[in-house]
Length: 406
Ligand code: SAH
Image 1 (cartoon, helix red, strand yellow):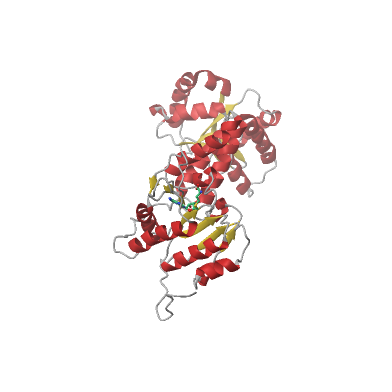
Image 2 (cartoon, helix red, strand yellow; image 1 turned 60 degrees about the vertical axis):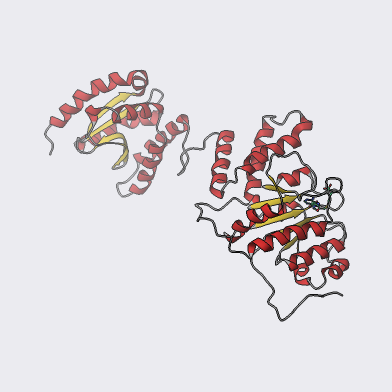
């Protein structure tokens, strides 16, 4: 009798629980019976991947025996991957051995794994396979655990809905008990399968480019094994972002510091030329662009500048002289400037743009008029022997320091 055992006076137990996913179920009856089993044990969320007989299904309704709210709420998906995209923990149930390096557990252990995660607010999926041939390898590959119920080895395959009921029963027993405690608050929530999938796709695409998956016939196994390495780690969302970033940085080359990009030395040089050009006609009020350009130059040191700066800041003779890099001075930008010393150090590139060279005298005059002393240093000398450059520079700066200032 349909609806037997339903008692409308009792509250329908609706505690948060795992999602049940049936992959390409062939018989509507099994979907209905699975829904009934779910309702018996307080599970409400059913997801169906391409049910063979289409959806909705009359036979499912009959077998559900009143558990229509589970059927009515069922969601349809094209692939298992899509069905578990929002899940951070997936258990694949299978009667067969899949030769994948994943923990294999029984229904009771499954409940113990699921309950604390559900209590912590994670979305967890219990996945069940096709009546005829269960789950495919790549589908099992998506899972964090394999659930295999101990059965008569000579007759190991349960009916789909019966497999659902065993797992649902264990879940219900445990979830209702006091044994389940929410985990310690976590720093970053566990990664969802969608984010993990995006990481896998980029990783595999990059590996494809270097023909990592060889020979071709081993490709599928290699991909599953590789994915399983990361799945076993139970990564957080942050872990996955980091790993993803690492892979892309290795593949693309580092794109520069986090804020803004850097230019290659040639481009940085051209930029300096442009600044010189631009600043020639600059009026004093237009300071904002110069400040921005100075910041850009600071992020794009030339090789000589980098060497010089690193040597200068590591040398105690120059400690406390308050040199700064790429400092806007009126319409100009000084390579290294000490305001207390009123000293500007210019590093002259070997192949500097004409415009830079042409504007040097006017710039020096502008600085001199404002009591700045300008010391020019050849980039080639810095690159050749920065120690010597600093040895020559040190006494000159001390002397400068002694020059009375206005
Ligand atoms: N002939 C299929 C069995 C399919 S039974 C096979 O070889 O895999 C349908 C589904 O019920 C399975 O995909 C699995 O999800 C579940 N199931 C059946 N027996 C099981 C068992 N002993 N342990 C865990 N899950 C089982």
